[in-house]
Each structure stands twice: as structure tokens, then as C-alpha cells.
Image (cartoon, rainbow, N blue to C red; front, side, top):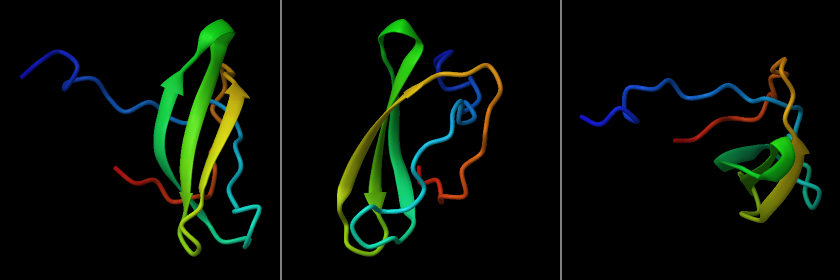
Length: 72
């Protein structure tokens, strides 16, 4: 087992979009990728229409949970 497999999954570090802008259904988080200058790229899929949405958010030191379901 690698050392990466032993690390906990990080909590959301900023408030991101929780509802689909097209149909207002919940968004499921597909992937969070660290970006430059403390930003993160959040890829999410709508649970109703299947649309893919990308949010670019500035990381914060205090996590703000989102009510969107998290998928693995």
C-alpha cells in the first residue's frame, strides 16, 4: 500500500456551487484538483440532467461544507 492510500480524503476547503444552474438539482463532486495560487478546480455532475460543471474556487483555511452529495 502506498503512502498516498493512507492519507485521509480532504474536506471541502471552500463553498462551491451545490445546485445545477440548468435544472437546480444536486451536484455530485467528481474530482477536486489543486490549482495555482491556492485555487482548486471542482468538477461536478448534475444528478438529474447529467450536465458537467466546473467551479474554480479560492482555497480557504476553514472548510465550509456543501450539502451536495460526494461520490467516490
